[in-house]
Figure (cartoon, rainbow, N blue to C red):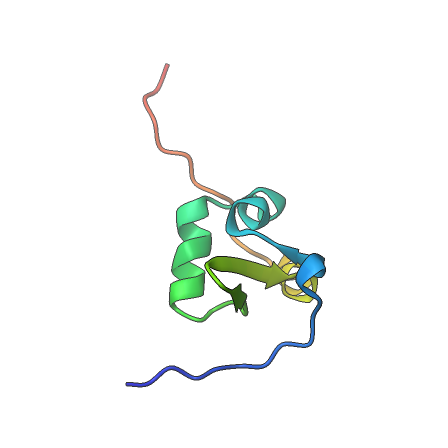
Length: 75
């Protein structure tokens, strides 16, 4: 199955790196990378960098996303 390339109207300066997007959305970095891999969120790839447009972050903020699950030992 081939990849579909999507043109996004956004400035490179107006984007978030995956780590910043994860922090902004309250998600884990693995979740952001999984969403990128599964094409659930739009991204701009410039050289070796991946940027998520501000419009995409705003769209995700408006959605009712489940809270980040924290896994660890009970105290």
